Amino acid sequence: MDPTLARGADPGPLLDSQVLVTGGAGFIGSHLVDALAPVADVHVLDDCSTGRQTAVHGDATLTVGDITDHETLADAVAGTDYVFHLAAISSVPGAMADPPRALDVNVSATADLLDLATDAGARVVFASSAAVYGDPSSVPIGETDAKDPREPYGVSKLAGDHLVRGYADWKDLDTVALRLFNVYGPGQTGGVVPSFLEQVQRGEPLVVHGDGTQTRDFVHVDDVVRAMVAAARTDATGESFNVGTGDVTSIHELATVVRDAAPVTVDVVHDDPRPADVPESQADTTKARRDLEFEARTTVEDGVHALVERAIGPA
Image (tube, rainbow, N blue to C red; front, side, top):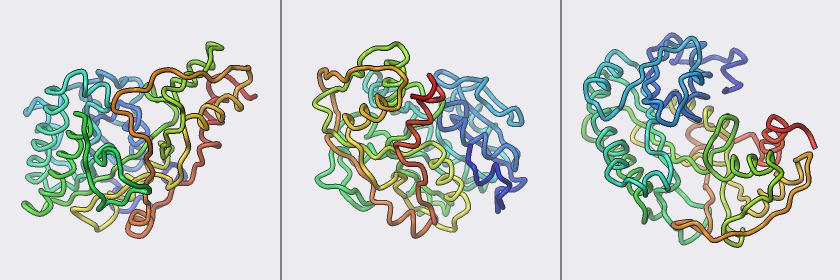
């Protein structure tokens, strides 16, 4: 949950507003709904294919439905002031397993949502991804750097990113895209951090794919929620912002942090590299600090230690 809203900070224009969160039963979405439900009238649209109904805040209204169904989406968007669009095929493996479905959900449904949001006069905050950059030629990565995704997930998110910016130009729709780097935190079920936690819980070695030198910008879900709220409040429109810490952690370093935080002794072992795995990723967060007044607060060490303690107890 976003601590600033939980502690009663001024929610600004979100107070008593009508808010739609697509994908609000999922990992990031449920944390966002937790933050918004105490101050706004929140409606969640999620097919619950990966999200959980029980994760949705009790004060929010949940519709279980598919965003690719026009009528379902139209009913959800009608009358809203803000749309946080998180529903997606949200992983590289998931998109590679079914590229047509990824394009349908991540691109076609996004275009439909933007049309409907234009009719409703709603502001749209779109959850884009650092995957739009592909394999960067250098880091840190700025928002204007080259975008060259080579796999279906990154391609679909880049198309959505372009649509969000385009609708701001074509139809004067208030939009912001947030390019999320490697998000982690409580409730996550996919990705390297949950994998390491599960391995520690079973007393198994931590499996690092590749040589472990690949680096990532790991950003805690609480910080991502703060960025999304900041994006809703800002006057900026048609803009994209990186959401990360600006720091990097190698996968081997991450495994070491998990191992050292655990109350059991486990080894770190290496396995084959994953397909489409980029060697490095790091956000240039200058624009978000300047225009959104957003800066991540949680270090990887603090965030991972809290997760390990939550999962299996202190070291």
